Amino acid sequence: MVVDDHPMWREAVSRDLTDAGFAVVATAGDGAEAVRRARACLPQVIVLDLNLPALPGVEVCRQVVAHDPAVRVLVLSASGEQADVLEAVKSGATGYLVKSAGREELLAAVRRTAAGDPVFTPGLAGLVLGEFRRLAGRPAAPPSAGQPAVPQLTARETEVLRMVAKGLSYRQIADRLVLSHRTVQNHVQNTLGKLQLHNRVELVRYAIETGLDTPEPRA
Image 1: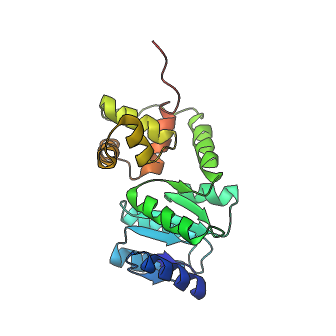
Image 2 (image 1 turned 30 degrees about the horizontal axis):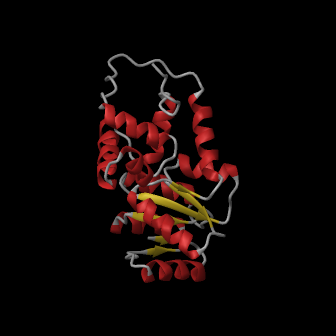
């Protein structure tokens, strides 16, 4: 699904995606329309502009992810400002690309987003990870009485999670661990289910908060 308030841009992106073999199930020109159509057609990936009439893009993202946690949102925005990037990620976006990106870069980003990889314009990934680390440095709230224990991850799931936290793609993880791309995806999905998280962005935040993004101590 493609959401942008500029008809020519919206049509151009939709055409490029269709020509590349994607099924564009819906388009929308404002935020309220985007939420309605996303709930009706349940797209796998939403290519979303942030500057929308009726409802801001971050609120669109927040609402559609709350309704369908499986949806993946790739923000395609003219802004590369830190505040906009972080707000988009906090609202549930799994990737962020600026509109200066070329056609092939956009198509590759949509493919990776559909596969579950977080995708960011070069330079923005470090910004997001840095913010997560800053947030993780805040004192954690004490566990409430009766709060269930964190599910136990297997050694392999922990190993994969550690690499996810470092920003590696599924393909890079598969190459390093000599596993298939599908096996890595399965480990990530199992981990998401155990931790009751929705996407890789939340998984990265969890890994950083628990210290899994730091190197393992040597024996």
